[in-house]
Image 1 (cartoon, rainbow, N blue to C red):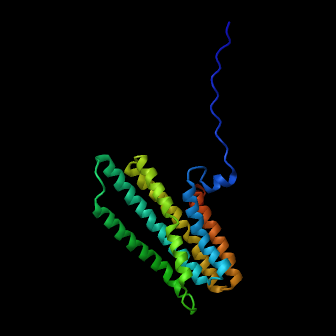
Image 2: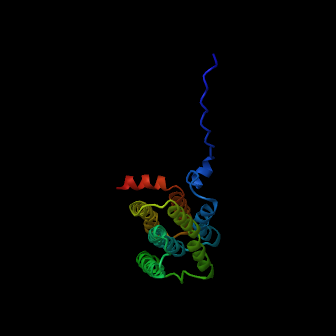
Image 3: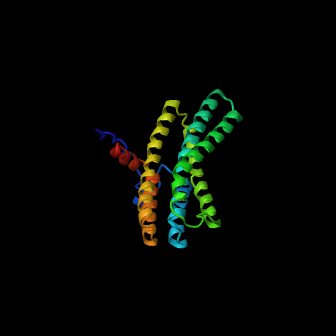
Length: 229
């Protein structure tokens, strides 16, 4: 009698190294998006460690980074919904939709950064906090997340996500973005009372590590957000 046929074993899932799993959110993020995240978060840290930035320069850039993240989240929500909806009917997104999205994003960005950035800008009587190098750092901070946002929009459109799922994803990401304001408030309170170079560097390292981890591993950030509720 012939031996019974043996079923094929499932193909083994390739193991990822700890660091690649950490950076890529367990293989769900591409290299360009990872580079954008790392560059954006490393920029203010390098300013503090290499250029001896003041507390105002560092915190102001951190606040703008928070406001920009919040704005891009809204852009992702509106752009994804519009692209998916018009793709189903075979029509391009009207130009008026993009104009409205741009104007709304600009208003949201100005309100958020103004509300949090005003006390930072006037936290002391120091000289003006902005200079040519700071403006270059600001440009890198704002350009850094764009590849990741474009990649996420393309993935959502390709998956043809329903509106309910798009809104659900956006709401979860809003919770994660709100988590990032916690270290900014803590850093502000600490640096107002202890505006010393050593304190600024220690706070900058802690803030950048926390913010980078929150963006690289949103699942861990979500668990942290649940604990705060």
